[in-house]
Amino acid sequence: MKYTIMWDFDGTIADTTDLIIESYQQTFKHFFGFEFPRERILSVFSLPMRESFIALGFEEDVIDKLLDYYRQYHESVFKYKIKAYPGARETIEELSKEGVVQAIVTSRRRRTTYEGIKHLKIEEFIQEVVCSEDVNRPKPDPEPIERVLERTNSDKRASFMVGDSQYDQMAAKQANIKFLGALWGPRPESLYPDKDSFLISDFKEVKNYVFCYNDKIL
Image (cartoon, rainbow, N blue to C red; front, side, top):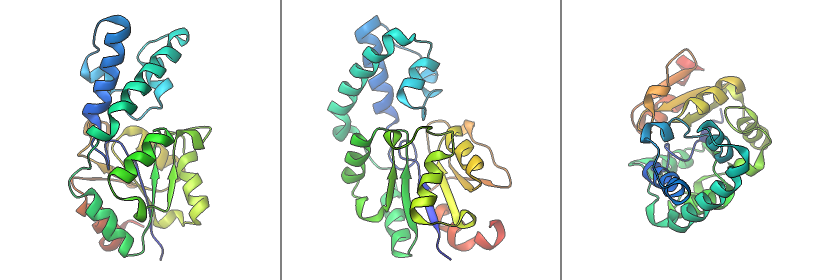
């Protein structure tokens, strides 16, 4: 059986939490002279950028200016501050050697997603990448996951979404695939286990669910 794993990027493979918060705070200080509470920013993690500013209470007439400044700052420091979570690259490489189809499914824009994939040296192990520009309806809608399933001709019964947010979990459930919740991300309290969702504490457990537990959960 061919297995497929779809990885979220930020908070799952890449430890970008401090970078993202810093980018928000620099934007708020530039325009308004104050910072938002860290937890308030964390609450909008994994949403597309425009939706995140809306969720934070900003009006449409200022969001374009906020987005432009955020992206300019974020992209200027991105490659200097992005890093992989321990065990990420090793696990992705091992899964590739086992013949697992792997994809990135992210609400991040294409430019920094591909820059991050290259920086973390995982590009040779990834068969598909779906970014915010590639879909009409990003996570928590299932469209990004369904795009990967279609492109790779993958069986839903042997496909997993690995992510750190409730939006990843919601997308996986709506796509009718199994979900592995990454508890090492910035908001583990947003995840919950059920018959199709399993919480994991390190990357080794991804391999366990694919190769050891699949007869019990698929």
